[in-house]
Length: 125
Image (tube, rainbow, N blue to C red; front, side, top):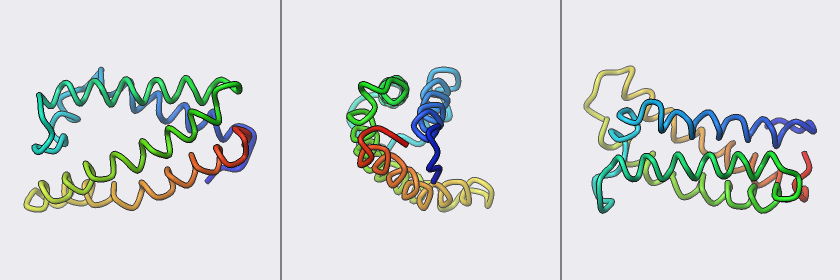
């Protein structure tokens, strides 16, 4: 986890990139929306992309950084079940796809800790 003064901006950049990808290539995100969620997958894809863009904006502004970091922590925890569902749904796919689905699971931990660390430091690095 980065501990520099750029840490919040790096996380903001990561979230902005992910959020923009939800709009630029929504089909790949539609495929991982848990089937148990009501409504259309595309709606969830766009909604989660919008949340990521909002979190990125909040992290980029010092005045809103701590609140956005707390929200990002909750977001990363909240999307974990979708990553679990993806791993379950993709368990019979080809090895590269299965590996990508399984690889997402442990990656949530450093993201949660990164956002939480920014929040705990009052929005500073």
